[in-house]
Image 1: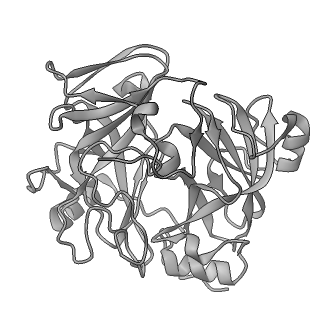
Image 2 (image 1 turned 90 degrees about the horizontal axis):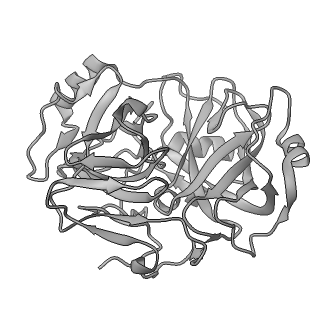
Length: 369
């Protein structure tokens, strides 16, 4: 098949061409997103004795033989902090020059369900090299509570590229000035130069504008989260965090938090946005599993929206940590698509669960008043 020679991230219609040419096998067109496609779980699962990365020439089937403790069943909840490998339904036969990068979906990131994509002979998580042919597997680790899954569930998504078109610092500044990437809650555009650096746009934590500024949970085996549920009581799993009087939050080691950014992110149609790898110089925590915003996020069908705040999944690493209002929490980088997608985020033809979020919001499994 032919792929547009223009470099960049592929939009929905180009990914659809790959599906129809069997470059992505067993995929369903209804799983297409504006610039990605959701991947789905098969019913083959294994409880592993640790995390494995394949070496060059080593298949994931070799990894399964080497590292399986016992065959697992999705009919039983995945245990807290257990390491599982689940084969995905989709297989890849990518054309030369087309490669992929995977991310958690928000629905899995917001319940602290860690997922990482693996492929045959690929010694790196979440990366699929140009021209890859083979099975896809997902490492799944429930980090906060046992999780009940079903075959067919979609926990992560893959984006496909023909080249790296992430914006440079100067391009971020110029395009922000022209398009308006960041806004405040008051609808006013936020100036760019103080936020834009040579590795992306900094965003800061909001601990002051809402009565409830976030949620937290501690690891527990007392509750099983049914991932397919849509009306769970959030108080059974998360504790709301009221706005602190002194503008700071004490985060304990190993706890998981949901917060929101002060800045409201706006993604014009020809762009997509990635949350870039965490910089430990900001502190001993990790922010944002999901790490991807579709074209049209905070933009609207006619460009009239003035952004939407980014909800962040945050957990601490080795030490307790004090997070202060307005502190840098993450960075984003804009990238260009090869062409605008046929359908953008927020289109009524495509469900958009987080379109109207204005503050910290839990995953779609929970009822939010």
